[in-house]
Image (cartoon, rainbow, N blue to C red; front, side):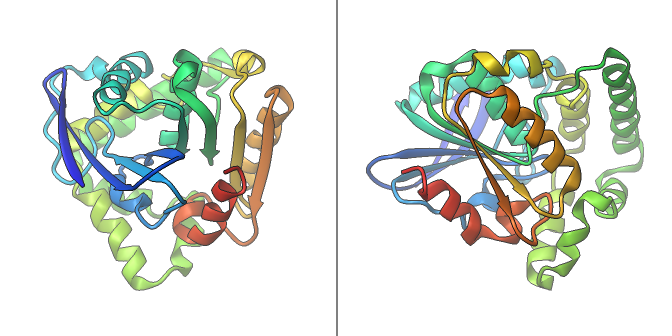
Length: 266
């Protein structure tokens, strides 16, 4: 069932599949859409969402600060209330994991279990935060001047996504098309207002998050494996899943392993 929900004058695209409990909600990654999570189909009701400003030819978000963590969470609360989504198992990947963490920190009553795939709690060091904000501002400017095709071509060469070169040509083409068909202004403003440097630093707050958390990383994603090892030492109720042979986008590279990790908690 496909739905369009108007939240504060923005059309959120939502796909709801399955029935019964538990209720799963999926947050995709940067330059993604709900389509990239559709093959992840654990038992129950599954809710796939195009996050603010993302998805194929999403309308321009005129109010750029709306991409901040606090403002996106406000939208999502309204969206969840509209569809009566409570007691949810919230799954986020990369950017979506950062947003899922922000949601759980601000609105824990909605979340029964949090699954963070290749996520982080932000940046602790103020100099590192400022450097990342500056770097993301430069990327945003490049998107607005050179366009999505050039930005995506450079993005796909990042070492973070090297393992995706081993996927089928069909999978690679799907991911490429999903990226280049994003709305440039939204991608740029997402970097400005919800990049890793711009998001809240949650490291010192992880100990207060009582919701059960599962951290999922790929064996070959050494950076996020280290970050998640550090997060696991601070979270009071945590389980780690490291998927052999996978890189950053674990669910796209090995969907069966991610479904198994989700189902293990049902």
